[in-house]
Image (tube, rainbow, N blue to C red; front, side, top):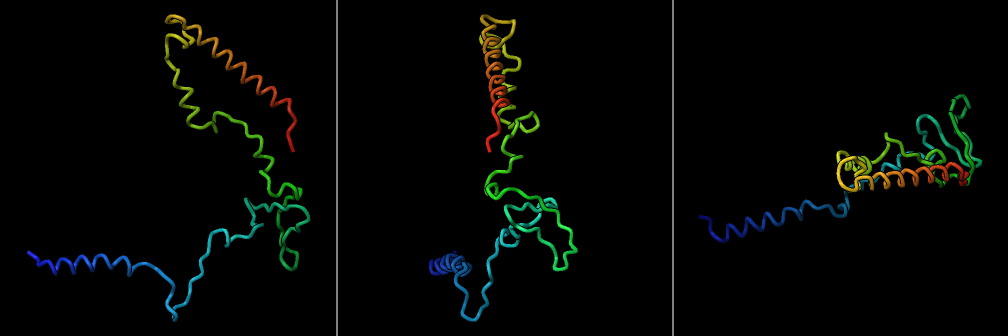
Length: 152
């Protein structure tokens, strides 16, 4: 069996190891490594899918000879910090519906009894009234959205 002084020295050595591995300020003779982020390496006007979006009076970049072809699209300056128009009016379709809504839609499959809109069980027709009211409400919202002009 090990002696108490040997065990205490071993525990002291283990406890001191993480302290030695921690990084602190560099030693006076060591060079400093600059920290960089992913955003620093990209230009603000870096092309996305081969197209640069310009706002206001920005110029489409090219090489010094003007021989390089760059595809640019121009948008008003007030649109620079807004969500793009093509993403503002997002229509929910079955392809992009979230999983919670898909699961909720499947909860009533095979249900019978009160509130189920089936031919089986007492008061099962009450579910049909609820479904019709929900469908009517969705149709009214869709019509109101269709009739309301897009906000700028």
